[in-house]
Amino acid sequence: MMGLNRPEMPAEIIAERALQLCGSNFRLHGRSADHGLDCIGLVAQCLAAADVSCEVPTGYSIRGGSAEQIVAVMERAGFIVLSRDVGHDKIPLCEGDIVLARPSPVQWHLMVRVSDGFVHAHAGLGRVVFTPGPAPWPVIKLFRILA
Image (tube, rainbow, N blue to C red; front, side, top):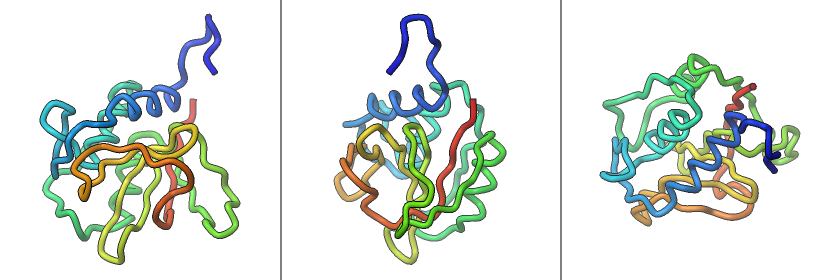
């Protein structure tokens, strides 16, 4: 909870912006709430709101790519990369974490952790949505901004 005189931390801004984007349309390679967002566009919007500079990938397909490519982008943006033992929850998720999940063997998906769930661009539902509770897919990596 924010104090009256305490500035918001980047992670709080990331989570707050993610919630504000709920309801935006889904669009592959989408980078704005007005025209649609994919999961990378959602994360890019959240990072921009927190003044975190990030090289936003382009030219990717909805399937394929590698975790290493995503890790490299997030590390360059100043995030620490944590592997997570999902079955044992060794590393707790924090508000504002960016989560790399694996919905299928051929697909990667980024989500933003908020206080009681996740915000993500859901292609099947055609919009950015809030999903309460635990991650709906296996979490492969999580990215945490320090500050």
